[in-house]
Image (tube, rainbow, N blue to C red):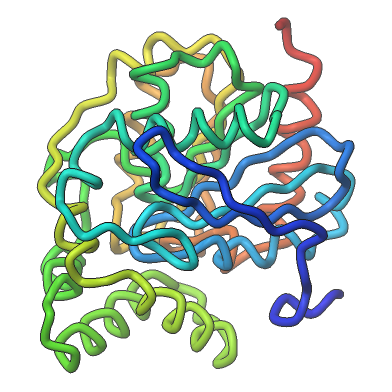
Length: 283
């Protein structure tokens, strides 16, 4: 297995969003392979997909990771409007697809990344996509669909550094039912701390219900969830299947909020199979 910490992308670049925000992008795998665009969650970074970009099961694909606006190595404007308008998130994904020339990419969204996919669908539909994978993803903002971490996420928006670090550490502990090794946890914590508290705070309080967007989907859909997720309850992925009626639904019974990190081999095999099948679906 390749070392996920020192593994280098074969290409690093930046994409400029319609509002001028610079997004840090990394490409892995096979340059001429089928494109897969990974979208991370709240306060994370593209590094969260390290178990995917190192995977032999996915090495034949063009794997694209990036840091959301306000995260990782991407630009971090602090004005709340940069994070509270669905058109901004939609524009980011459209810019990535266009400027990187991703032909019918399969988009994989984790947690808040599911919202970003849905924001894109709201403004652009799914005609330019090859398929969608929602991983413990947010597709509605009803309180009953969330677990016990909302207060921790609120504290992660604190400008008091000690409070912020303590809340971030506690939040990450709750993300993983199967604990990460120490090195992986340190990488994850460090990446989380790259997101300024103002950005974290601005990403909250954006109510939405994406049922119409899910119901209108025509491309293949996979909903994945960890049964023991304490951040977003598995009922959220039930909501995806309820509205996107052709969606495939897979539950990882022993995992928490991040099956792709907690059970990477099984997740990567599942993802590779879905992408292969999606490539044979009607255009």
